[in-house]
Length: 466
Image 1 (spheres, rainbow, N blue to C red):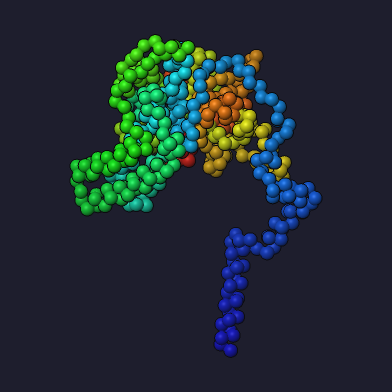
Image 2: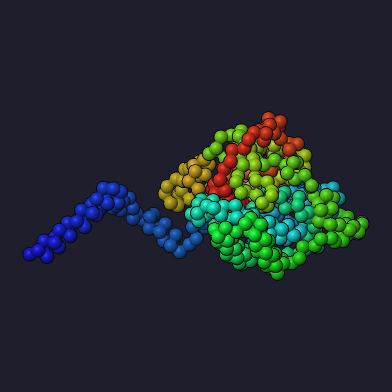
């Protein structure tokens, strides 16, 4: 009798618990009934189910009303020679930054073709980022492992992504070399395995440094150990990417490919002649982030590529202010570093970024109505890819209609290696622009004199571009 009572009591307890869960936010039987009734199973519903069940959604939502030929005329366009290809790597930031300088070198020296070596800069980027991580571990060694900064460091010891700040950090310190002096390798074009192995080693080193610090090791001892660890990383980089040159011969050629002059260079002298020694002072970084106050200066903690480099500092501006500077730069035949959320509404075959490319609403029977601010707030959109802004089409009133970028996905991708975007898409999915300071109004330059508002390294808007 007692067992029976206990059994009944247990059942009552379970039922009460389930009922309690329903009241606190679970799905009750009554609620489930209501939810089920939202699907009527009409013939059109069944047809859509059948279509989705055996097809790629992206093909089903292609908007046939937006399949006309793309207008490829641009009223203002900076000429370029040759499309670069980052292959299976996250080095878009590096290719874009180098392409901005490359376009100037081509125009100045009338090259038939020309590229800076991306692998050379990438080599030093990976070594410097490794040092940034290890020194960060030393500097936070008195904090627990679950501290937010320590956790972020161990989650992000190394990556092949970055921003324009990285181009400036690395080029200014290590110079530049032409592509033929240090050509690509399989590991530079397919970075994931190399990056994973180095990241794994860095995490191991990070734990060892924390352990030494906990045992009371002096800063000089930690520094010596860090140097030894970086020697291991350097060797791994050499095995994958090669030995960076310290001096080389460069044969300058004209637009017909004929030799003009044989030059002897170091990477620093090559930067001085063909690149830009004043990347940090000559350029400013702008952002369009409607979740934060405009006309304010911001700085991102740890958003640099060298420990002794400069954190990414930018001014947040309305989109129309940024457009005005972009147009001024293009009118003066000057390309820019540009980044956006490239995966949104991209028609890869045509190379078109347009919100009307795909009609998800009609297929799913519901609207997707968040604006740019809401997408950022909910982690639904952010800057993911950097490209070189090179053209704009203006109407008779001087308003922008569409834009074009030089991409780094190879000459066969998109529209002859480029992407074209509507002005509306630009408004919604463009985030960052790096422009020469001479195209920036004084009132914006003055904002950079403010003490920057510091933002944490893990802020979702500041993930590295790939």
